[in-house]
Image (tube, rainbow, N blue to C red):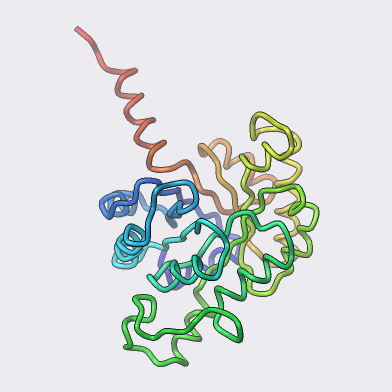
Length: 253
């Protein structure tokens, strides 16, 4: 996996597996890269990740040629620009409920009129070593824009949202969606129906269908609904699982 072909693989519908990073250290990026993950998603929405943390983690990901997505705290022009300028492969914008918002995040992540501000001096731009033409082409080919679908209103409008130009993926947020649907867990009929609807809309529009899963067993089930890209747990859940296994298996004398 390289950052250069990550978007292409997404749009082809290849099975891609990554995880959320909640504890932003370069060492965690290094260790997770050794596992052969297809990508890491920095959780800037629900974890204490500031701009300096994001900068360091993205730099390490680029050094290792490991695609780094950033789930920004909110789908605003400012937050999207921060993530992309430090060199993130792409962004995940939370709580995209309408076509208008999907159009905004797509525009703010792409160069053009009223879109992403251009600076040739950033890490993403390789610090002034590329021409404007080269950078515009790179952005068109490599920058990933993902809308997170977390409300029933977004599911209802999913065909139109999926058709948004410049959008590459639809990330179903199962927890928020379950809460909105008055469910107390994510593995329920209402959420699965929403997953299938989003996946079908993504396929029609040539987009990638993505979600979070706690484990690989859940991912296998959702592949049958048409989803192809999975954030499996996080480094925190991996640490907990490993520690619990040690405590369960240790021989006490």
